[in-house]
Length: 290
Image (tube, rainbow, N blue to C red; front, side):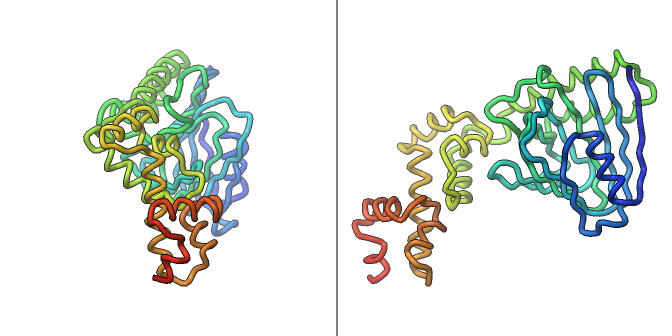
């Protein structure tokens, strides 16, 4: 079985129903809950599904953790997509793809005029490395080839049958896996600098760990640790120093010690004071008075 179905609407409510019919339980929100111009085309077989969309107004899609065992491969084709997934925010451009793990919660804001495609991949078809979701570069192979394959599937959808659709989608799944393993986006020579940048950007988050830093830069924790070890430091050391530097800066302002500790990523005032005293030889209160 291979079928192609197109849905057009100019109202938000039927569009929400279409989204859920195609993608499962999602929460759809709109600045204007009335008029909403949109079109979606679904190609599907018993194994794979490919959906293209084109919307006229802004829309936000939210998914809570569910029992969905499939992965989603999303490629914006026109307009960026503002993504919040896990503890990370990212603006997904047309030069990137997103591989979302099974049941992984996310929030995705699509701007007016957004156009793109999303492929449903059975969990048995692909194994995402080093984390539940990955940002894929589409600027070079294999990501560039992946984009070409998927857009060709869309352009030639009327000429396909189930066997050809499944075969090409299977190849796309393999390309997505290769693109997810592509490390060239952050060369090893630049990795230490990229880690420091990510740590400074996220140090205020008390949930930030070495594992999360590694995921954000697209490398494994062991590889990040090895690179930093050559520079005489560790992910934990960098996170602590970034938090202390942030706290030292905030101590020049009006916040209380407790507020500064929280704003700097420390889980408790005790942990903050001990780390600060060890680093600066005096308490935060004494530092502020000097």
